[in-house]
Length: 130
Image 1 (cartoon, rainbow, N blue to C red):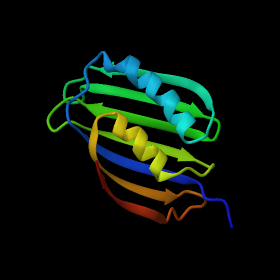
Image 2: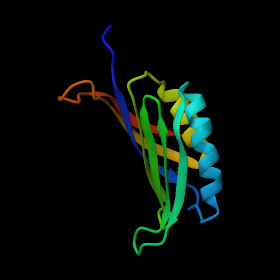
Image 3: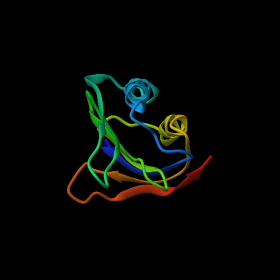
Image 4: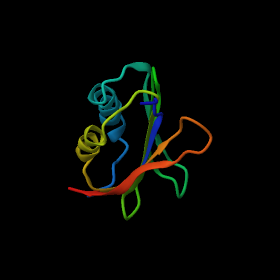
């Protein structure tokens, strides 16, 4: 079977919006995410609070030896985030879902694409509710 370079794109919905102190929690969460998908950190997580009007929220990212993961939370209502994980090493949707649940996610939509070549076909998509 040929290698698949998976890229999962997520919109997640939260019970409550994260605040500025969420930055420290999110840095630790990224480290645990990398472990959960059996990968290795290449660039330590960096997370910051954004005060830009209309874009208030937390942004974070981590570099992994096989690519990256990033997230941005908006602090308004409804509270939601955009998340992605891209890797040339396979990973399980279930592992990612369990980690997203830790964020207080009650529902998320996802699309997984194969970025091995220029076509980027959709491998899977759906909605998961907790």
